[in-house]
Length: 88
Image (cartoon, rainbow, N blue to C red; front, side):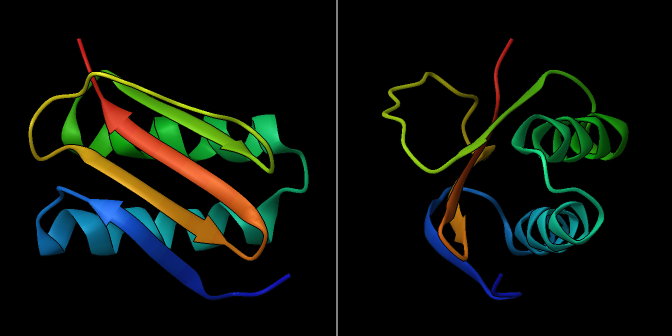
């Protein structure tokens, strides 16, 4: 799988985006199961930026979510999409 993350859409500031991208890379290196990848990413963002983060990882899905301003990223890791956002 590619180690390159492609950001498709984001509202995150540079520091938060860099952390999200690096956390995503780490998750894909550690795990093969999409649920485990999503859980790892979500928990890391909860720890660093407070709750409540949500993460979806997969190949095929549609989405339409409400999120806090400045807390959203849609990216690809190889052929897997990663949707990460904060909402209360």
